[in-house]
Length: 301
Image 1 (tube, rainbow, N blue to C red):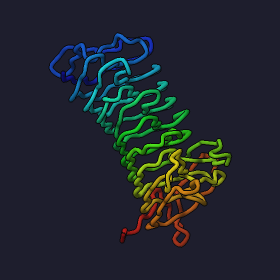
Image 2 (image 1 turned 135 degrees about the horizontal axis):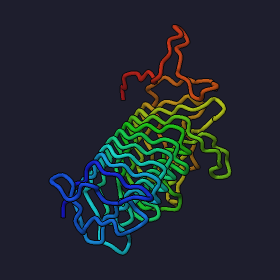
Image 3 (image 1 turned 180 degrees about the vertical axis):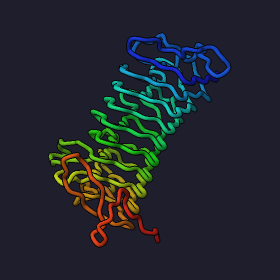
Image 4 (image 1 turned 120 degrees about the vertical axis):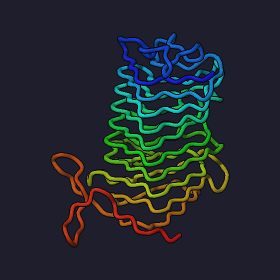
């Protein structure tokens, strides 16, 4: 079953289907029904594939879009393009083992509890060039495993950009490339250690690949930006390769014992200072020129 939904809105006090459905561009068959009151769009119970939701808005909902449950069939190969999620408990929740291959392109998640998650549930997804701001728990939360990719996303003022639940002994595949994490507000502890400003918590053995990610936070948040931890009892407990990642903090990452991390530095690591208006840009110490992005040197790996 195929479906395309375009330019519609769902809100807690309004309709949960495309307003112009059915039409040549907006169709809502039984495989994607709004019968569940907790979600703007709920995919299920039958199996569906090759679906698209584009330029839709989801506001003030417990769940913006949900892909199946443990009692339904999978909902796979779905593209979410340029959608807006505002103040939802969870923007996108995947909750079936076969809810796989969800691609999010250019979506915005504003002040949600969690922007994208498969917890509670399961399924896998990939985010490309999305903006995630002010998430109260995390922009992305992963419980059960699969293959995940996060490329050229921007996170601003969220509690944390990414969190993979601790406790899995098997590994998932994680790729982070070209993301910019600004002003993470996490102020808790990991393994009994205070980690203010933590942007990524990898509680999974991986393998993990991180390329050219940028971490920007206030001087008062000392980091680290990434923490690696695993319930795996093998040696090594996990594996991560970091290339060209930059931070304005003192420490890019910390890890528990026997988690193998190789960090290849190819960028310039600078610091910024606290300001009345929050995060300010980076200034070149020589010329004084304001730099809003890091200067990434050519990688010679």
